[in-house]
Structures are given as structure tokens and as C-alpha cells.
Image (cartoon, rainbow, N blue to C red; front, side, top):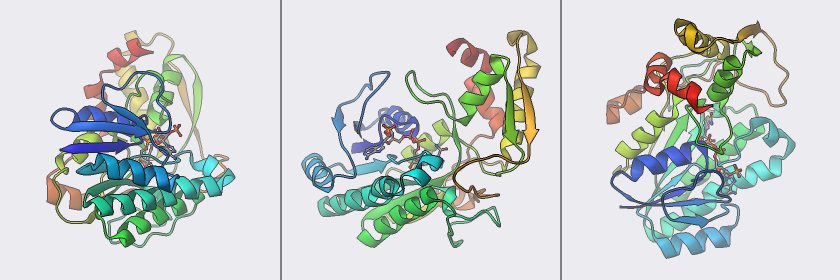
Length: 302
Ligand SMILES: NC(=O)c1ccc[n+]([C@@H]2O[C@H](COP(=O)([O-])OP(=O)(O)OC[C@H]3O[C@@H](n4cnc5c(N)ncnc54)[C@H](OP(=O)(O)O)[C@@H]3O)[C@@H](O)[C@H]2O)c1
């Protein structure tokens, strides 16, 4: 199977490439390639450029296109709403149109931030009501894909965590871990409940789904509903169990308010019953993911 991963240089994109390369013929596309060189063919592709999107997809004719590319800085989206709309809404529209033309299919990655967070435990049939420019633009991207009629799986996920490759930006997890290792006191909000998702598990789940034959929306996220504080507290607890490795261990300060440009949902946790029923996929909880990652190894990577 020929698989085109758009957003190949990003956090999820790189893990997806590694996962699919086990058996498939993968091509990575992104606006920029930094850091570690990807061990697959790479092409420049800006999804906001409809002509470029069409040319490349019609030429490559991938059997499966995985769209992980997005403008993911939620606060920056408030500052640059036109850019957010172009990347998160129009980008998926152009990709869907071209993929439909070649008779291919798409896995598109979306977000829990399409919900307002008043209820939590959202299932795929719950009604979205995004609070931020990021959430609105991502929801519009989903709608464009559905309207295009392309064969698609839309996978909504939540706070991706794991270890970034060399040269990649930190995620919330790697930032907290590095800060604690270096003895910092970090202020973490006791709120914003999500279902943190181990990025390697999501990449593996997408791999399992690669032969999907009907269009569906899935909530592909971790099994635990955690506040930001609970999430970091678990990381710290694991480090405390291995105290001798961390002589200069930092602390967490619990806060109840955090000044952020974009509104965040109070509880955007996702219900993952459907992905478990259809594909039998269970994602690791944070404790198991920490065991898998091995905090001693992580410390040595810093
Ligand atoms: N990270 C999370 O916690 C989280 C939570 C829920 C949902 N999601 C969704 O999961 C997906 C993957 O997230 P991620 O954390 O892997 O994001 P990421 O690390 O920011 O990766 C996104 C990639 O897309 C690229 N990109 C930006 N604009 C582009 C354009 N016009 N054309 C082509 N590529 C472009 C980015 O390049 P630059 O870095 O140069 O901009 C980056 O390499 C996204 O759809 C996101 O909305 C993420």
C-alpha cells in the first residue's frame, strides 16, 4: 500500500511514518523538514496551496493519505485566525478533493477541542461546540472532509504525549518531565480534564485501521480522564519512586487559574468505546506508558 503522510515532520506524523514503514510504502510530506532525517522519501507540500495539493496527490496516487498536518498552537490560532482557517479547514478540504479524485481514502486527525467541555466523556454522536479559533477551524476541516464524500476516517484525539524526536518541539509531557528533572517548580492548573493519549499508541491504532472500508468518526484517545495537574503528578510520582535517578527533582505548584489567550474546554475527555468495539484497540494509561518509555532512558536522552 502506498501511504502519504502529510504533516510528516510533526510529533504524530513521525511516529505514524515509523509505524507504517513496518509493512507499507510511505512518503512523507510537510512544509519543512527539520532535525533528524526521516528515513522515507520526502516531499514539500503546503496544504493551503490547492494547486500544489492537487498536483502532488494526482501524481503520487496514494492508496491512503494520513493528514496529521495542522496549526496546533491553540493560542497562536487566536492571533492568526485566517492562517488557522487556511491550514486547519481549507487544507483538509483541498486534500479531500484531490484524494476523492483519485479514488483514494483519508485518515484525518482532529481534536477534542471541537467540544465545549461542559459535559465530558464525549462520544462521536455528541454535538460539537468549539470555544476557540483552533477548535472551530478543526471542526470546519472535519466538515469539509465529510462534505467531499471521500472515503474517510476522522480520528479525534486529545493531549498527545510521548517523547519527541531530536529537533522537535516539546509536548506537555516532555516539557514537564524535563522541567522536573532540572529542579524547576512548575505551575500546573488543576483543571482542563482531557484523555491524554500516548502518541505511539495512536500511531499504532491508525496502522491497524489502514484497510478501513467505510467512512466513520472515531474518538482515538487514552483511557484516563485527568486534569493537567493529575497528569503531571503521575509523572512526578513515578520519578519519586526512582528518586536516586533524580537528585535535583523539581516540584509542582497547583494553580486554579491560568492566563491563556484561547478558551479551553473544562472537560473535553473523549469516550473511546467505539474504537475499542470496532478495532479492539486499547490505549495505554499513563502509568503503563511511563513504564514503556522507561524514565531512566528518557533522563539520558535530555
Ligand atoms: N498535539 C496534541 O496534543 C493534539 C491534541 C489533539 C489533536 N491533535 C491533532 O493531531 C494532529 C497532529 O498533531 P501534532 O502534535 O503532531 O502536531 P505538530 O507536531 O504541530 O505537527 C503538525 C505538522 O504539520 C505541519 N504543517 C503546518 N502547516 C502546514 C501546511 N500548511 N502544510 C503542510 N504541513 C503543515 C507542521 O509544520 P510546522 O511545525 O512547521 O508548522 C508540523 O510539522 C493535528 O491535526 C492536531 O490538530 C493534536
